[in-house]
Length: 419
Image 1 (cartoon, rainbow, N blue to C red):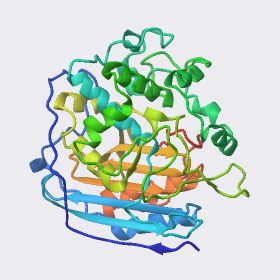
Image 2 (cartoon, rainbow, N blue to C red; image 1 turned 45 degrees about the vertical axis):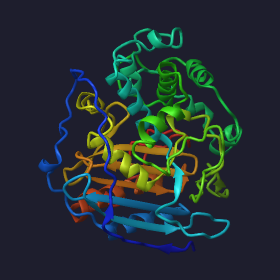
Image 3 (cartoon, one colour; image 1 turned 90 degrees about the vertical axis):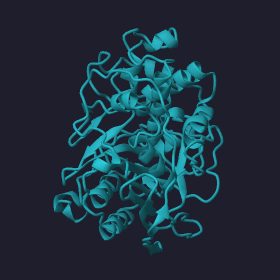
């Protein structure tokens, strides 16, 4: 049985971060039912339940994840005060060596990358270099088959562009091995999508598609003249001092100490596949970032705390459309409504071998990142939803949420988890 341990630590200093100023841009769509609040107006959250958090991770390991970790950063009243930090780990980071998981391990964050990409584009909107309601083809002539598809549609998964990962990973292990070391261009990925009819008319409905955030990467590079890596570094990871966050594409290695990720084959009798080393070129600006629980908590705290976007752009990011039971989607940002009445904000991430939940409170003062080192295992994916309940509802979490039903399956590597 994999080694297990649980750790709780407290009172770590938080980073003092700088607000990115920018011009106002009027929002005219559905408002956030839980608008941004200043720290002084923070409503009290139920205390987190570290024991329950550890129990969720233990269950995930019992269900087939070789390892799992979680970290809560809980600031009391302000972003520059000390945070109480709770960490929990279960299982092993490397099945070959038996090295135990560590809460500081780096890992592939999958579609949490989408929130980083959305922040860059919203900053460009604040700088008057991008109009969210302009056609994508205005900036990238001839890329898409319909001039009615806007930047806003892309960031909110309302473009109707088919998700190419359905075909790519229809068979989990063979699909992954076919692209593990392959390097794609953005336009090659878009072309894979355009082989299929669109799923709906532009703006008609929410339909999650990785293609949207491949288009987002193309927009970033066209508007700035820089690779997405440079824009992530200059606009987010550098200013926030996210020292565990890297965009290494097309390199295949995770730098430094990290957790290995294991892909569950479609055949339940087959052995897990170590999927850690890969280009992640099939994902790029839709899912290729590497990070840590500490860095993701810092990022989301900064975002919802108003330190990465001006108020107008943060408000636009939080204009919601329903995206499943108890959740909604804005612009590169997901909202989850929990059993205790608290809503949390962030993103899920699925990439071969890794399930990530990264969410923060409405004011950014309490953040959770949780990881299970498997994928293509809907039972584990659903179980990890319980980390949100433990972190934000604590002992007020309803018992019925402790063991949620498995999420509908999607190909390993795609991520509209519904979770």
